[in-house]
Amino acid sequence: MTMTFDFSPGAQIPRTDASPHTAATAALSSAAYRDGPAEALGNLNEATIEKHGRARRFAPNFGEAFCQAVIARTLDVTRKPLVRSFGMEPRIVVEHCLEAEELRHERDKKLTLVAVVFGLLFLPGTLVWLGAFEFRRRTDHPEKESWQGAAALAIAVLLAALLAWRPFAGGLWGDYVRVLMVGPIIGWLIAQRICLRTAKQLRSRWGAIIDGSSVGPKVPGAVPIGPEDTRAETLRKQLTALAAEQETNYLHYAGAKGILGIGKRWGSWQLAEQLDPREGVTEIRPFHPWDVVRKIEEHLNRMTRSSVATGGIPKIKVENWIVQAIGEGADEIGRPSGPEMDGTRMRASAVADIANGQRFGLGPRHYLGAQFVLWDGHLVVTLLITVTVLHDTLRVEVAGHALGPLPGAFTSPPRPPQVMVAKTGKFWEQTAKNLPIVTNAEVVRLAVRAPFTWNQSLLNWLGGTWKVPEPFGLRSAWASPPWTHRFMADDALRVATPVLRAVHAATMEVMADHDVSTERFQNRSMMLGSEIQGTRPTKADEYDAG
Image (cartoon, rainbow, N blue to C red):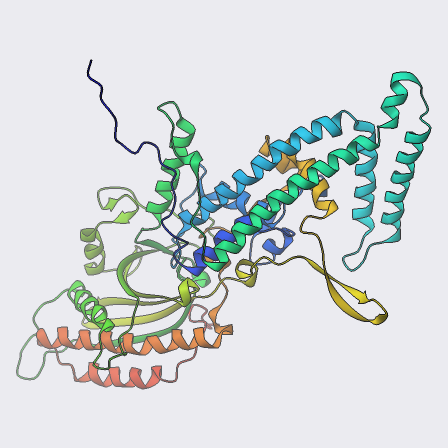
């Protein structure tokens, strides 16, 4: 009998080979593990509560709401297309959301068992304690606890002591009444240890991601263990499709929102002159706009080198994009399907056809993008170049776009919650006092939610659901304007000048090769060169034409 061995590695857990590639990826990934009130998430941008819940006690916290909204939007089988996220990797963020949810599910399994044993079996006492905690929550103020809330808990404690000392029944029922109020307390102590252990795990992952020492997300649920494991196979395909979609070259313009994914347009410089033959030539040699685009692309790729040792511009990415206009209020984007598309990307031949075509009216437009991902992904500067010919006029336009950093709510490391209290012996002075990572109210919230986590629709009905702004891009949804950061603003403004001059130099080279008079182009180029030296960010997509 001959024995054969299978040396294949078998099913592997998808894991990144290092920490998140950019700080922007790390910042959004850390949101999956964060705690605190979910209202802080809604205050960051247009994200709102889609439907308020029936009971505040079932509402999710920051990390739970973030994971719920992101997973539902990115992994739903029938989801809408996503806006491309530049300067980060959305798949890593989604995988961290899945890992954080897995940690919470493990906690909820244990809490559900505790709730059944110590909550359901002692239901009357459990309801009394829950009523006391709910009354305390409603009466307490953010600055200090109210005496009404403390009184409600004191009454519950007295009732527990009274029933334990002198129950109103005898025999077996008397013994039950004695522990009626004590049983939920024992369950609370066990639940508190479970919640604290998970909270430390979540905060450990949060801190490791922010520090850059994380080894990457673990998603064993995305690894099929057999041909019948359709759920894992579906998740694996969804994650693969998510990563592939982020390589699309088909973008969308949405009015004052600008081109989705790259930020609003803050400046525009146009070189538009007559195509006249040079002196001594009767007519120019024919050329296409795509010829100019290719020459500009060649010059832009050479910007990484300079005659000065440190003068090259690093991290430049040059790419051809197709941009389709949609309504400013549109809540969905779409991409064409057909032979001109290769998955989510438009084929190079179709891109060249659009660049050469006469786009005067309806239809997508071609742009050549020179993009710089700076500040470890927190700043994305994009210079878009478009070349058009209308009759005998050549127009070469350069437009600046900037996508700013993420808010501090995504970049802050884990810190213990604090409250200001009066100093001992110096009541007129205050000092910061650290609070427990998991408060009593948080233990109650998690223990009450745990049995309902197995039915997400019912939990959403009880605690409320969150939605993300549409059209949704994981990077652009929470980006802030870069102009509040002096150095970021300087970088965005400075890089526009060399890009503009490289574009003009390439244009002049093509004009000279095709017997076009370059005198007017050179004069206009010099004027734009002077103008861009004093440029300031403006709202270029908001026109005052009233």
